[in-house]
Image 1: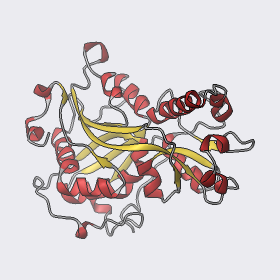
Image 2: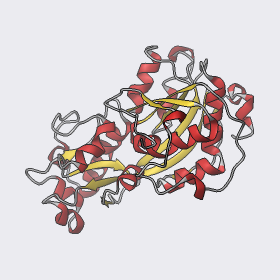
Image 3: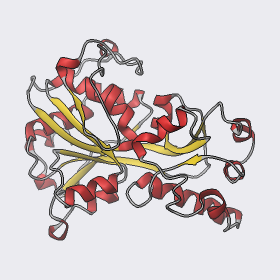
Image 4: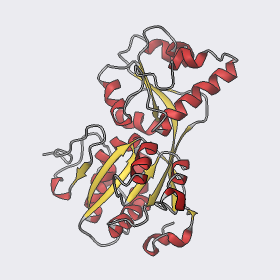
Length: 306
């Protein structure tokens, strides 16, 4: 059985990665652990880590980061991907009690900070960035036009099948709308927004974030809005938008994390030499760690890392 042979992920169904499922490197990564520089990580642990993370990292987490973390630390990983806003709402509603939360944009953390928001988060640290790009199917009848014409003209063509995420629950969906609005302002063409996107919640375009790559690869879409790391991992050709918008991933240990040692090990792993090498190889632009918020609430075990 392959490294992720026992994995199943549908919608927001939690992903379970276990060290005992490991028997070889996943086919989708070109970063076998034997080629990575050595790094100093804490001794092996045991038990689960509950992780809620931005759905735009699902491929990276399933195929590369998760298995490497398990191998390096001995912990298991229960990971649930999804729109960062939606995941934060689940935390606030106490539908789930995670150890670690990775958001696609820093602002989502503030919705979990302070007494009025439940005091779930006191601090976060920058992790990595990735620009918003248009990924397209090379088999699409619009592929040639996307390579040679302005993207906004092609996306507005009749019959063009565009995929994006829900702006109400996913920062990438909100950034997509912002991007098209900015392009419309630059062109002095306000109608461009409705021509490309229709309504904000257009049901013919809006899909769960963690399914968008698969929809494009199976020919259900001509193109979609992705963060560059998603497209790079799935080998999806892209078109740059010319606008500076994208993900700024952050990480935090949620207050009252039920598996604190596992959470600390995960943060240490991501900021270790091995973790940083993996993320760079996944097309992410590494951010220097720093504490944003109340540094007094940062666990002592990771204070030297941040």
